[in-house]
Image 1 (cartoon, rainbow, N blue to C red):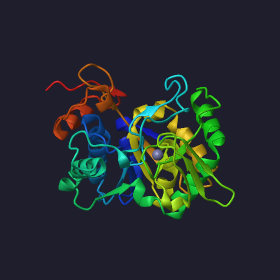
Image 2 (image 1 turned 180 degrees about the vertical axis):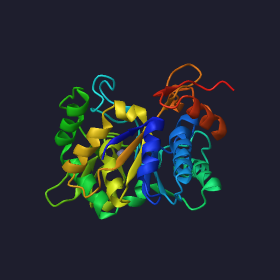
Image 3 (image 1 turned 90 degrees about the vertical axis):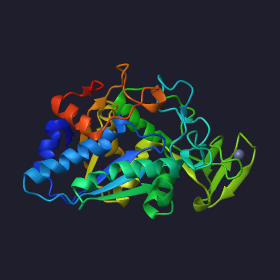
Amino acid sequence: MKPYFLYTGLLDLARELAGDEKIYLGTRPYAFHAGNAMTMVVYPLLLCQELKKLGKKPKFKFFVFINDWEQDKLTGPDVKTYPFNIFPLNTTFQYAINKEDPSQNIVDYWQSIIYSEIKKIQVQFPDVEVIPIRNSEMKTNPVMKRCVIYALGHPQEIAAILRKHTGKLTLEKPLSYVLTVCPECKTVKGTTEITADGSILHSCSNCEKHTKAPYDRFDYWFYHKPLAVPRLEICDIDLCITGFDHFDEGDYLIRQDLIKLLGSKAKFPKTLYTPTLLGKNGEIMGKSKGNAESISISILIKTVIENKDAEKISFPVS
Ligand SMILES: [Zn+2]
């Protein structure tokens, strides 16, 4: 197990893979711009093309993890200085309002767009499968439940791993990587604890309601770094394809340590890091940065071929 970088990494993987591996693609139900397409359509498509050149038939299963347990916006005492003392500003995507179309659930809305974009891989490679999975669908899976409960009770241990591989500082409080959604007001505000009898106790600072109930009765916010572990285990993932910025954040080593900490049977997956696409203003492309654009897949592929091992790719001028 080792990281694979950019186009050279993709060529190495094409030689090593059989073509039937289970592949992890992850995103938030919030946007789908050219930067997302780079990681979730262009690189998977190029990987399939390289396999085919080697006489192998791509039959990958692409699991598209839709993180409806992610915060609408991250906040904390000082997110830049203490990036691991964080919590949702309001709630999770599962309960967030869809600004694009308030009549439609935000997760349904974006999942259908994301799925139809990634399914374009099947035009050239009809034997690959594209399988969208929401986090909330995995809630009652025993692996997910075990990881959520462990993470809820052991934030210090998780923070120690995050510190070790990033050199960032953490404050003593607030330090939570799992919080429940308030069953009453649907915000993620207040405190979440496990009681001696194994129930979850939520005290809401928004509506003042206190709720004590079994695990299954709540929905959750679960910080995305430990959250990756139960996904890897549940879907028996062989390869992750993700953006280079995650490697820069230390995620490769963090993930290995979190797999061990959570006592997971997940494989340490191979990981392919894809280039960061810059927007027109030269900053990393992102909806929250206000520079998200759509670019056709054929132009993105041409741009990748022209910038094979560049970590950052400038906005293509067509
Ligand atoms: Zn509440």
